[in-house]
Amino acid sequence: MKKRYAIVCMIIVIMALSLGNQKLVNRSLAYAPVAENGIMDLSEWDFLKDGPVELRGEWTFYFNTFLTHEDFAKGVDVDSHRISIPSTIKSMNEKKPFEENTFYGTLRLVIHLPKTYDTYGLRSEIVLTAYELYVNGRMEGMVGKIGSDPASGYPRYKVMNSFFNVENNTLEIIYHTSDFHFEDCAIIAPTFGLANQIAYMGEIGLARDLFLFGILLIMGIYHLSLYWMRKKDASPLYFGLFCLLFATRMLLVGERFIPNRLDIDVMIYVRVAYISVFLGFSTLCGFVYHTVYGLFPKAFLKLAWYMGGIASFLTLFLQTKSISVLLILYFTIGFTMLIYSMIKLVIGIKNQYKYAAGLLFGFVILSATFVNDFIYELTLSNSPSMIPLGITVFVFTQAYIIASKFSSAFSLAEHLSIEKESMLLELKHVNNNLESIVEKRTQDLQSALDEMASMSRTDDLTKLPNRRSIISDLEEVVKQGKKYFIGLIDVDNFKTINDSYGHKAGDRVLIAMSEAMKTYVGSEGMIGRWGGEEFLLVMYEDKLEEAMRFANGLREHIAGLMFEAIDVGITITIGISVCDDRLSLDHCINQADEALYLGKRNGRNQCRQAKR
Image (cartoon, rainbow, N blue to C red):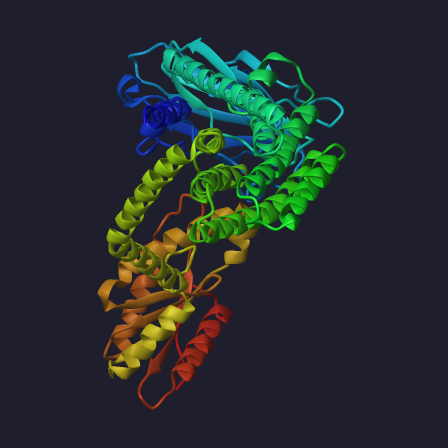
């Protein structure tokens, strides 16, 4: 019993250490500011109370040029792009003005700080594959060597903590960065805080990694020794190899203990890190196969070793981009095998296989952390570095299983009885809360469906009803027998605006004009985007003269507006048709269209009535 309590306490300590280096950041992420247009306002942020901040949001990126603090002080005439940090291939491709994923450039963020503090720290992890950091024009450090082509630079993966004083409460962060090797466009949001907070994060993270490395190393050597003394049972052999492989990986990831202290070629680092995963999974399958011997077919073990061997061999020769593709393929097959293993373990529990329940528990924890980290590698959007926690919990649970195999039959039976009772209580708890869980999922699904329905009826740019929505609403008006007139609106010479000021300026004009028309129309009608620069106006008027007066009022209102995006006025032409129950809706719209083009041919900026 005392042994059981000691193991539980040890797992709790490890979990606390594993999560300790993220606590300061995670507690502030829920309400931390985000950067907008290359600026982050932290002037009201209390670092002592709220902790450090991940610098997420819109940074300014200048592709294929290196700009300095002095360049920005003088003013730069270079195209800038707003990129979202953290970034992935998907998010970067939405902003890059070219298709290639090999590039270099300048990443910039300006931060407004409170007046209370003067010594800060910045934690930089991945900013493409090489970068130089400048804070207020002063170089604070570099990782790898940046370059404007593959030959002039080389990549490195290190964690860099920088500390500096800020005198005028304004901080300019500039990264000169490049990627001509991995082509993954990965940028992890740096963490900014007080110097002691950033230092603490690094210290607690390093302590966690070294602590877990020591545990895995001791576990590995211990279980290899058990196999050496008793070779009849191969499960300690596979378990020991599994611990040693992931002990090696523990020094490569997280705080990157080895890469931060040894100038290792990045390809060696990448190959060792991936091979430790590939072979680690193979040893894991071997451990499961021999722990519940007879439950799994021998083909399961052969497949695991073929997968690990082939993937490891290919990793020795492939480049990083190809290794990433190989990882996705390996993960797909490996995760399928994990699911298969858990199903077999459930069957093993039903068939009263010894240790199947403990293995299943460890597999669930391990699978969840593997999935989390795989998603993080692709999206950079969820909690990173959960594999150390999963592996450590798995190692302790499975080490306990192996220790149990060397104990007496009576103590083993007592342990299994307690474990079964614990699992039943857990299942009972889940069952009691099943109704609330289902209700919550149903509400989430309904909310998503409502949002999709709204998006399908709304124009994405102007937020006005789209063509489908306005036609549907107009059909309801017809059914209700209301008197109405249709106006088809066209923005005069809109192509000239796009050609002269650019499509982004044209889009801003359409947005502003749509808001103005929506406000003007109000409850006296409806307006929606018909397509391009055309809009459909529905007027609830009884007489043609009133409809013409309303349309001319709208036209004059638009003509009197000034738009920030351009330095010229905007006019519109409106074609109006009279609608009644004798005419079809399509006929009314066609009449309005004919009247519109008649107005455009006769000089624009006017309202024209359709011929009856």
